[in-house]
Image (cartoon, rainbow over all chains, first blue to last red; front, side, top):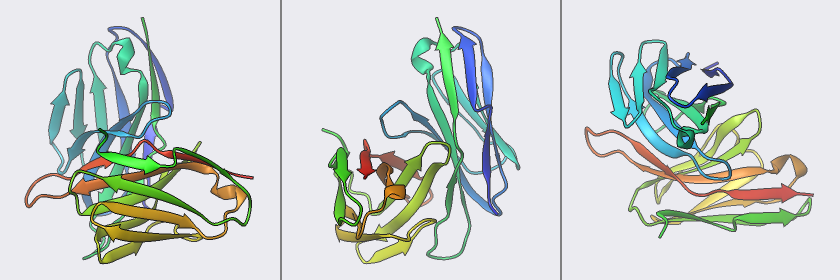
Length: 113
Length: 115
């Protein structure tokens, strides 16, 4: 069964304390790996899509990287406003006309001033 | 104005009732999706549509149906609501420009409580 597993489930950081969130996946034939940010009571907000091992993308204090088995979301010098739940999701090459998207359960990040 | 809107934002209904959740988008995307989110389970795909004439079941379609009335509108129906359909429902849209990367945009969600 295809799976996407995120760790840790929750992470508390001091403001300025850099860290990484992990997303490991077992989908066969990865087509794309997505990262989202979700604030309480709101819909997920798209951050990045990664397609191939070795690919990296950056946006402000966030950098996403991808290997053949996992993706990392690196947060550099986080601020309290970075507090949110971060979700990753993977799509696979599942045949013409079909679509398979699997989400992880998320990592809840809290950044303490 | 929001690019993806959902109505209603909150709904309380009783077991056995038929309800419809509506989604509209102004992004001009062909692809639309319905998800549900449950605590501890994450987001799960219910149905998706790649264009007006295309409807596909997702991971958890049982008990749900959809209608793609136009490129901009995608509705989710619960024919006979049951308590375990209590969840947060999200509509999303995406495009996949030729050779480009897919970007998904989510609506604000509909919180549904089935008594």
